[in-house]
Amino acid sequence: MRRAVLLLALLAPPLHAQSPWDPLFLGYGTEPEMDYGGRTVMSLQSAASRGIGSIAGVGERHPGVAPAWEFPVGAAVLLLQHEVDGHGGRAREFGLSPSYSFNYDFSAATGTQRPPKTNEENVLLAAAGTEADQVMSHRALLDFLRPEGADGAKVPLAMMSKLDLTLYVSEVKDPDRGDAFVRQYRDGNDMAYYLISRQAQRRGADPAAVWDGTYVVNLNDPLLGRIYDEMRTTALWNLLDPVMVGSVINYFREHVLGGQVRVHAPTLRIADGVGLAIGTRGALGPQEVSRFLDLHAATRRGVYTVYIRDLDSSIDRAYGFGAAVHGFPLGPATELGLAADSWSEPTSAERVRTGSGWNATAEVDTLFAERWGLSAKVGSKSAGFFPGLPLSDGVYVAFGVRGIW
Image 1 (cartoon, rainbow, N blue to C red):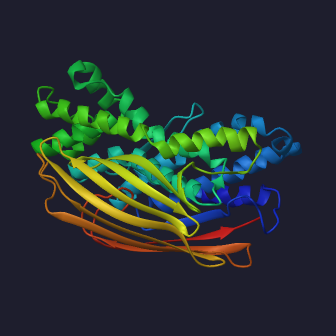
Image 2 (tube, helix red, strand yellow):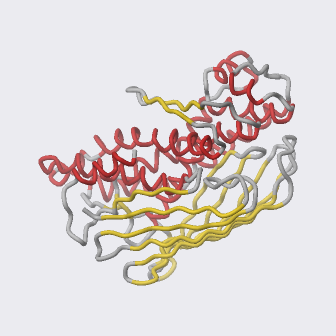
Image 3 (tube, rainbow, N blue to C red):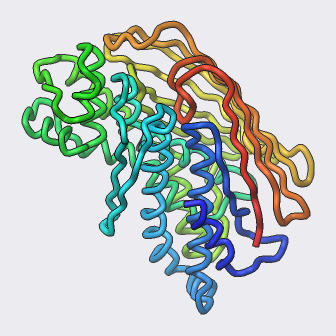
């Protein structure tokens, strides 16, 4: 994937220093670093779309045809985020040595050399693909809220990654369907596997049997159906994201019909240079489902976000809160990002962990001579699940390079 980014960067047509395109990015971080992996995937989408659109100048002369390649390219690179940065990221974090297969029909799969050691690992592996997609789409939507917006070619990828959780959940059979649901689990459906792994955690079952598909599912478990219902509610909540809907509308207005390279997410203007927007997100954790409600303030000096997080274990409910700033200018070529998160763990039948959790992150993006730059991120967190971050406590880091060609 990283070689592909560099190759496409070399093939892309040269741009002047004041390029309307986002800088290309290549990054790496502490596993399961889904954020900088997602930035790399988005950059691959941008470079490929730019290269295709520049052929004979078709993109400049006929901007209305851009979806003809931006959606297929987005669908292709989304597989990298879902499998390599998602399932693969958690598998690498747990030391399971993942491998991948990609098919011409836009299907893909992740395998491991060793089975997971615990059912908590099973649960997180099952949800990791949609988790990574959510992390990537969240960063993209924050970029669309910035005053300068972001590369419009990224909107199809952001939309598909955002909807991945919703679509995966919509495909899983109701556990009341019995054999049809069990068949999905044994065929490798991520969401069926998620539900059954949580049941196996509650029953103390052998994690290797769950991984191999030989675990005997208890279809009479009342929590199986309740978690299924909560998972579907989370998928619907994730779908109803006003920022995403507005970005897609503006993709067609500004990018496809208007021929603009960059796209902006619409906001409710409350003052000169200040707009408000609301967003929704969902995540599937080892003992709960999470629903996020974001309130964004888009300003000339960064995007400010506060959120509330509803953690629902199906037998108890707890809450989390957080605040962040994205793209705060420290100078003409340096930007700062900060985030702080706090949450309580709900009582759960899985009995994974109790108490409270926290996370703090700082990030710096630079661009030197308006041509190339560096990015770095450092954070620290308590043990526990938070989307895109390591499960264990401690410090995590990420770094990357940026460049305009």
